[in-house]
Amino acid sequence: MNVRYFAAARAAAGLEEERFDLPAGSTVADLLDAILAVERATPPAGTPPLPRILARSSFLRNEVAVRDHSTALGADDVVDVLPPFAGG
Image 1 (cartoon, rainbow, N blue to C red):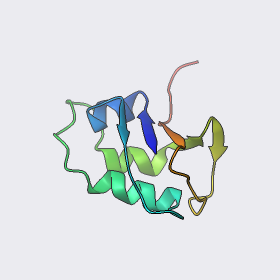
Image 2: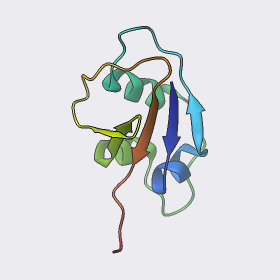
Image 3: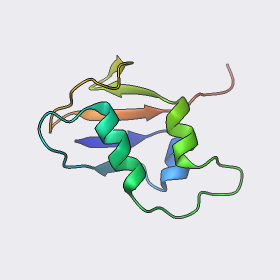
Image 4: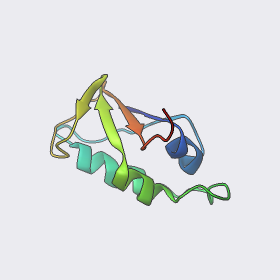
């Protein structure tokens, strides 16, 4: 599955998008564990670390909001990580 990072999540992850190959039946929670298992460079100054951002983020699976982390994911799914946005 592809994961796309936006705003502060992009800065903390150090990239815009990455692919994860998880076993069939994997959930959003499993994906989050896989994201956190990747060794990453230190984020830019003023950017919170990725674990903190993920804890506060919203997620979309194939452009539909996912609130339940036990939601199963498919190999071809696209998961967007949307941290809280400021402004208006």
